[in-house]
Image (cartoon, rainbow, N blue to C red; front, side):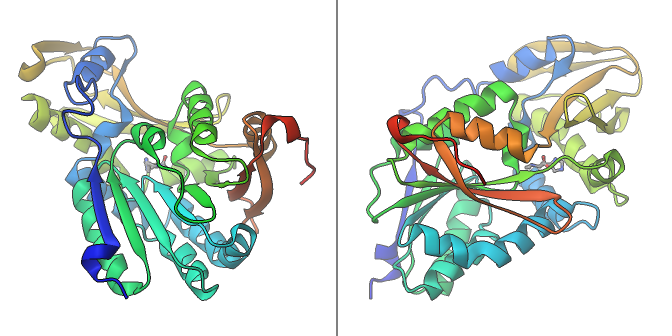
Length: 342
Ligand code: AVI
C-alpha cells in the first residue's frame, strides 16, 4: 500500500507566475462593480475564511433545504452512478470540505474500484485539511488536489489516469452563474472531457416563492451575516471603511428570471472608501448592491442546454417533492449526438 505521502499531491495553479496579471485579486472587478448602476460585488467575495464558515452553517439551517435534499438524493443514487461509470477518476469543482462527495467515494469503494479524487478549490487551507482527512478515512484513495479556479483547472486537466473520468459540480453552484456564464461553463466541461466521460450536475429546481425566500432569509440571520461579511472582506482586503451596521441584507425571488437576488441595502446616504483601490463610492439612502443571483432551474430546459453541448443526460434523480435534481450526463461526440427521451 502507498504511504500517505505518495497518495497525496497538492498542486497550486494560482501561483503569480501562472495567472499574472490577476484581475481577480487586484480588485479591478470590485471597482468595476461598485461604480456601475446598479452596483454589484462579484460573488467570490463571499468566501473568505469567515464567509466559508458561515456558508457551512447555512448548509445546516432548517430553511436551507438544498444541502439536505441533495444529500438524500446522493444517498439514493450513488451506487447507481458508480455502476454506470465503472472505475473512474472523480474531479470535483468547488469541493470545499468534500462532505457530500464522501457518499460517492463510499459507493465507488464498495464497488471495489480503485479511487482517484481530484478536488478543486480556491481555498488551499480547506483543500489540504479535507484531503488529509479523506486519506485517513479511505486507505486506498489517491488525492490530487488543485488549488485553482474552475476555469483554470478545467484547462489544465491532464488526460485521466483511470479508464474514465467524472467531473462533479454539485450543490447548485451553477445557479450562481448568469445564463451566459453557464453556457461558457458547459463548453469548458465539454472541452475538458473525452467522449464517453461523465459530468454530474446538482441543481436547485423552481418551487414556490415562499419556500425559496425562507431559505435565503433564515430566522437565525446566518444568511444576513454571510451577505454582510462581504463588506468586512472588502474592508480587510482593500483597506475599506464600510460600516456593516449601515447596510442590511435583502433577498427576494424574482419570479420572471427564476432567481433569488441577494442585495445589501444602504440604510442612509453615505460615502465609503477603499483606499487600496483609490476608490470612493457614494450611496443614496435605500440604494442596493447586488451580491448574488441564485438561479432555480427547470429540468427540461437544463437537459436541453446540456444536450446542445453534447452532454447527454443519461439519468436524472430528484427527491419526492422535486425540489432538487441530480443529472448524470455523458459526453458524446457531435456526430453521434441524438435527442434522447428521459
Ligand atoms: C453556493 N451557492 C449554491 C449558494 C446558493 O444557494 O446559491 C450560496 C448561498 N447564498 C445564500 N445562501 C447560500
